[in-house]
Image (cartoon, rainbow, N blue to C red; front, top):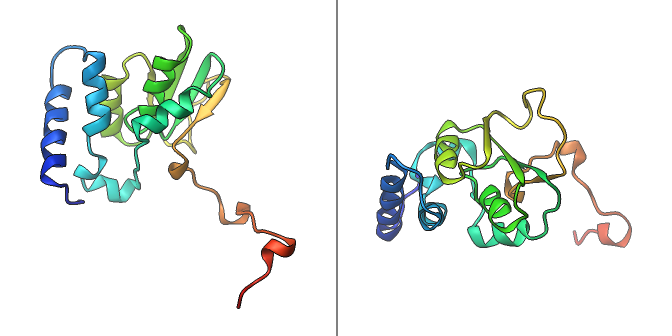
Length: 160
């Protein structure tokens, strides 16, 4: 478990209190949770390698997203999904895929308008249909070693 600063721990606790409320969160409360719920507050973070998308970056990505059906792969607690729904056209459908059950639970509270699926992105359930755009925090993407691009020509010259 990563050590949080005193301020981070206090804000994380406030975010947890909001998540425990037996009502729908307001937009400001949702933003507060997205800004302050710490993925590093549990030991699962180390195992999952989670790095949540900062809300500001999520907005930058969302304004470039096109289409009606969006899938957020490795959605975390839904920062990208929230931004796609908030800053995109009305009526947009966002499907969030996340394997960590705690993140899905938090995400459902923070982004209730999205469809949440607890699954590994490499083992998606059938019948999801087609999506116009897929989004993901770039740090969550994994590529097989054979797919790693290597520079060629002058850029490949070594300094050894």
